[in-house]
Length: 258
Length: 221
Image (cartoon, rainbow over all chains, first blue to last red; front, side):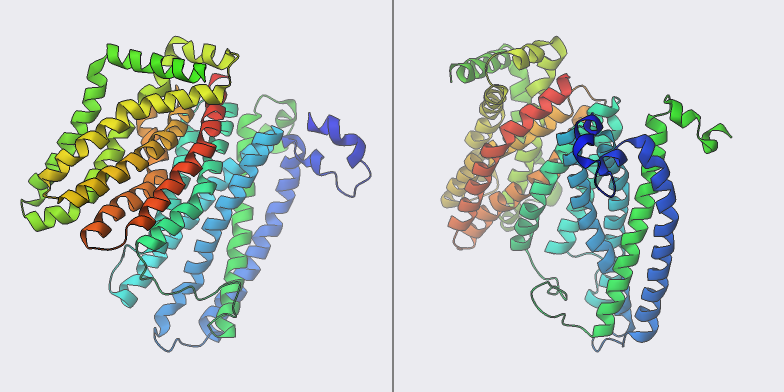
């Protein structure tokens, strides 16, 4: 539908973005992009791990144990960022009624949930030697846990509605309600209790850590980012195949005909 | 406006025809709060300390019980479809259903909370604060809950799913509601908690009816 309306004014652009909103054109493009993102994830991962294990200095207070930060912080960043991206795709799907946007949101949810889980898990491993407890009821831990619940709610809602179009729209509304609530929940939990160490990296002031530590974290974050894109694209390809199983173009694919 | 009053009246009438459902939610609230002293022990100082949290968590759970009824029976017998087709704005009709739910499931909790508070040995000023927070907080619970009720219409295992969707969203209300009572008992300023609860209520009033009516329309399509 969008293609018809927009073809006239988007013809003279370099890439026709609206063309990509159709599952049949996006499927092969995603297939070509996946190896690129895997390679990028591998390169950033190797560089990041090398910096974080061999270049970054030993922390004065926490010793070698702090090195889990290089997994923990990127996972937390990604878990929050993916929720925003997921809600954005879901909102786009709701507004423009494009099928692919909703599929993208559905594909991103498990990746984000996995990141949130990873962040909690590594946080527990980090907390035990540093604070002497696997878990404390602190603002950031609690809101990360709630974020995981929000992901699980989204996945559960989509899974339990049989009609995929209705599941998409209901999921989109839930994601948007969730995205409005995330800051409210974050601040309410923060005022409720705070004993977590202050944020080490913020946008307003220079990082309070060694440059190499920050570099390692940045490289690992890029690695996680590329990994998330690669996995989300693989998932979205599977979802496209599942939903478009009756379409002609799916039957003509070599991997389906095998 | 007339449509709003009509729908509130209709929902209340339907509830009055089946009083057991209302009483179940209220009874649930009383039973759950009474279980805690049995599980924890009758130490008055400890009970006084946990009372706000226990009463608020029980209130969250018992409002969930009534949410299932908000749209589900109308959805099942087709009257929800007629409401969507009605010339009146759907937002107004949804608002009416939310208000009716609050009168049935929220207001009785506010009324009975002092009684539960006495069981937990709360003093008079804490009881007033408890009632005040419940009065501000339970409408937010009904509002947010309506989104969950609308999204899970006609879905397999909808009541369990709804609690999974809605309970995380209830957390700010729980924090400020129980926090106010606790702050009062240790002699801290409570106006901040009340302002935040009021802000949550205004925010929810401003946005939730639109979201819920959109969710109802999605379910009907």
